[in-house]
Image (cartoon, rainbow, N blue to C red; front, top):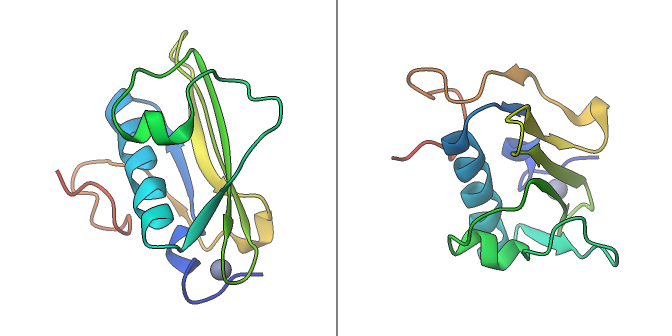
Length: 119
Ligand SMILES: [Zn+2]
């Protein structure tokens, strides 16, 4: 279940480095701001930092877990990362069938990763 609006987000992006996490946060935040996504607030958040705080540049907790939903079609996305041991994390749609293709996050040029790596 994907639509035009969230199709670009239906990729699995592995996050291994801090700048990749920062990018993933920024992309999700941009999509919230333009109303493509809304955050699904976890009633028992794993992290004490809200996603809005994170997007503004607050330091992240050792564990991050945020969920989002496409405002048009309802597709859900998860951003998870474990930063303390640096084992990394991922951005991915909840529905594995929605994944368009596997992309490597931020290799050299980032040409294939939509809306990311504008730095
Ligand atoms: Zn959608």
